[in-house]
Image (tube, rainbow, N blue to C red; front, side, top):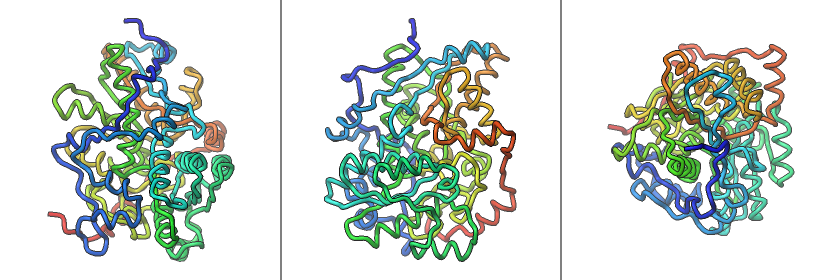
Length: 456
């Protein structure tokens, strides 16, 4: 079959339901725990932090398909479907027998896949009659997407941006402000937990764990607000399943059978969104795929972390999640993939990895940017540093096929553009970029502070 360069679905072929991979998982992700009692968090407890409908989605591990509200479907139509691209030029340049495809989620104003969940979470906040929401952001893609969704629905938006990214990515910060968001570098002196972190770690560049703590404190202490999160949570991977559902529909339409499916992994929203429907087929015994999660060597939760209950935030005010973690107090080196700096991994992704259903690799950032530049020069898209981790391993797999002669089909997620990440590209182009890798001692010291739990 002749495969077009870009595959777009018709509007009638777009998914109208999200897919919940937990329904097909034999081993369900462990429940969130109340940090005070260490008992599973109840709907009422979660609803004090999250919107009620989102808390229900967080706890639902049996419903496979959940209807997407019409208002969200109408919003999706502004930028979906996103294209599934056959990388003909890249295949030719590499001289590989492999077929390479990428799902491109950067073709919207926010510049990334994050808008898929941002509009959903903002919709449920509006439905509940809230005044606004609070959140954190690393590289700024989530904050950008949420500010855009809140502007569309008339909600207030307060964003705590990891300090190192706030300083490295001023233009993404200004996009958020243009959409009306209030953006604060984290840790800050505007919250109790922020002040505590600043006193304990003077001069810290911050982490997503710090920013989460501040955003949660701001939400629970302000009437009419709830906290929303751009990754990690079950509800987020549910919303992001539109990526994989569209990809799978396009593959089925053109009889494309991926052998290897690759995604970058920080908290799990990109990777989980892409692989969930394919993983469902694997779990049901309908097909088999090789799944690869790619994370930065500077924040290697899957490849060097521990599968255990841990706090989701540095300030230890959020529920505990069982996940691969480096410890809630882990503050990674200031790498340039600001969105892949979370100390833990989605409970869903963690459980799938723990069960041997997928593999994980870590990459140093100089190698990642080498792949990003190569991809940009050949395919004509400047990729976000986060997505470039997937590009790195996709190139490695394609070159391995060149060596072995295997004609594998490789699929990866390209979930963001790098046009607000030019400081990082400048550092790479000027030869000033270095690799940051935590020592075994660094990780062991952080893991030594894992909380006691009631797990069996």
